[in-house]
Length: 443
Image 1 (cartoon, one colour):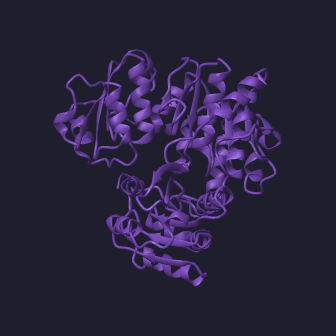
Image 2 (cartoon, helix red, strand yellow; image 1 turned 45 degrees about the horizontal axis):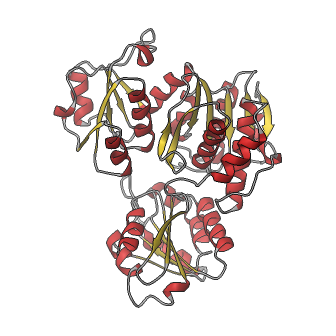
Image 3 (cartoon, helix red, strand yellow; image 1 turned 90 degrees about the horizontal axis):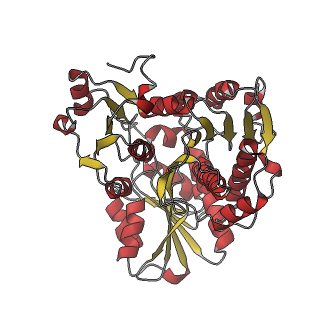
């Protein structure tokens, strides 16, 4: 594989003129493509399917090919950046090697950018997307003009990318496969730590080890913004060189977003902003958070069905996120019958967290399960949505699995749905379940 040499990596920010993205529709990839396009580079790429992000790129005059084909790669391409979901034998990656085009993963590219900027990285099992969006919005309101990459389309700037200064970088950081360790943050925000990505981290201790290494990378003049009293976080802080900032003490204004978890996200964002700019004005904080409208697939209101049921969509795909989203919905709509249409994400996660998923889903009034979204995995024998449905039912909540997303839609759209105007439907999961929500309100 051809890669940029250590002496030439800096050319990504200076000399390179044409960059090609494989998997350009990914939420992080599409943001990075916009960032490089804003630097004046020629940017193009491909993805398997059309999506809201590929549509967003088209609006920014970035060429996107639907489908991977070796003929898509322009002859003058100087660097190929690929999503981690793209295998090494992908046709375009294979062609790039034939053309002797250097390759770099998305997170390697972020790491190179991070080295040259004052970086504020937001990590954690839950809440990092919302916290990153809030933090970028606060800094923007304060006139600090950050560049930001967020893991969703933020309503406040209608993108997953916020263009700004070349020396201030706010970025959502993922711990999966140690991607977080590619970054060089001056400020590291850790919202929380739980056992997740079980195909890579066999235990909570394994994921804590990655966060421990990330903490120890933060320089002495930087800061770790977190909850140091959380028993899952405290062990990763023991050898930190940077100061520890407890975000739980921050005051936040009333939010448009619902749920205690979003109030915690807001506190983390405020503490991150103050750690970066201690003199930041309270007025800018209150204005940014009070106006913050959230992002795509974070308890996003989609509309109503033709029968009058309210429809929301949420990205929750970990048991804690599922439970907290349902709790927030009950807080907001105490009189509604909550129906959750859940799309389990990954066989390994479903297997390893099966009982936790069952307990979380059982807090709804009714649960409909789509088939497991395999993503990068092969099926695991005996791990199915039917098994999960049985466990939810055993806890006293009506639950059943259906054979396709179309069947989930057909069930939820039935005219005979009981008391539809008293119902709140939440489509939930990291797969394609959001398309069911869109169909329901389009009808």
